[in-house]
Image (cartoon, rainbow, N blue to C red):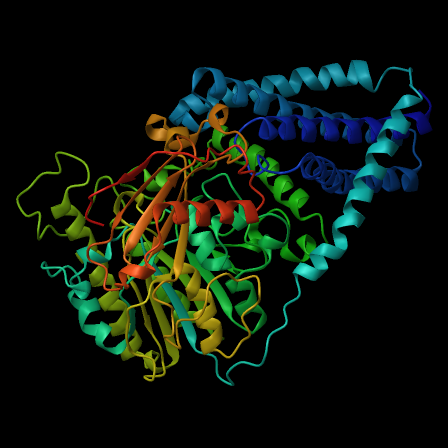
Length: 632
């Protein structure tokens, strides 16, 4: 084959194989529960073509560099050198695609795969990968690149793919620039540190700071005298991923589409959130939560956190600067598919064990322990040279089993069943000790007078979003203390922080500041939960969504809730019915004339879904309505 044909054909086939790799991964994700399941056909196509373009650019650049080197040397062996580079690169792409397809197949059909292999059994996959690579190198050498046949369709096909991808890129570029822009007023001359500290699955009624008979929160109760305390706070989702995303964005799960993994923020939602606003004002932003469910990078919170779970965006395959040029969903998916092959190769060659993202909340041993989370907060404060915003989420009370450091209420007992209250209360007491240590540190270091601390819980025990959850805020200004009896939601946290800092609250935030304490007693609080029947436990692998049960018009949504005064209403979207009842320990009591009827609650909840683009036309008008006597 002539030199120019060797160069041209190697280049074209390598780009085409890159598209094949992208397409096969895209096809796997688009046909299973993934961040693409509620995207339009246009958006899904955009992900495919933009990801291909992002992968094609570095591959083309590498081949171009090799060609330049070959051209400069002008030796007889130069075409062979270029050809061998092409053979090795092509073979690696095809081998990677093969091992991914095999892993997808075995996991889908037989329930095991690379991530589930341990110790030396991982080497079997390593031998398989090496064997595939040797075979493919031989086939590519003797077949694709050695053939003299050169179809005129090949360059046309590659040109078509590149042009199509480029068009999609330029169409979405202006949107990204707009989303990266915020308009806010001036802030303090000296910005306070902000610690947004969450605790998983805690009912306010199980905290002595809220009147519980057991002394589960002695430190919090004492410190609450200096705080602004919301007596009737509620989460906006019964699932950690949806709740934390709502908290940071100030948007309902029905607005962002983030309810449960693998949901992610897409489009402008990926850039509209509290950490992005604070970062633009000079904050160093840190998140310490858990993998997958609460991780900002996994939920696609863009340009927000400098550090998330002890890694930075700079450790990702694509730098934040590159991501800002556009192709946002393409960059996200590119990072996913390259991460998938990277993790698997490191795992099978015994270099680095592949983590299962769901083990963090289904087993007692977490990749990041409670001590590491707490130490991360302290270290971030110690090392901060600029004001720091820390979002940390502790897991001590996460069920169904609990692992407190010390047994007080459960002393002498064994945890023989799930959700044992004595162990649950011990877990809350465990968290309270960390909270006390935090304020000791702030006082001893002189940081207390210039630090805002917000305490919250993402949902109630057993993922109940109609139970009251703790919400307390310690401001550096003692002006803001006391109790708020009106209903408050986690969506209110971001607007409250912004008002305190004298930053305009953007109109896309759906909560409101609680500083003025002028909340209407009849204010409606909406929350949304994943459908429980589509979540399937798979042993140690964790909880997964069953794609066969995800369908329009409500997709992964199962129940939407409304809290009004001291009443709760739960509308089931999959098995149409509405349950309602009284929140007996609420302090927000309304006049009986102001209490809405169950039918009115149903209309409010359906209207919210309709406003967010869900098709409610097939939801029946007449549904069973049941009064439930349950102690919320």
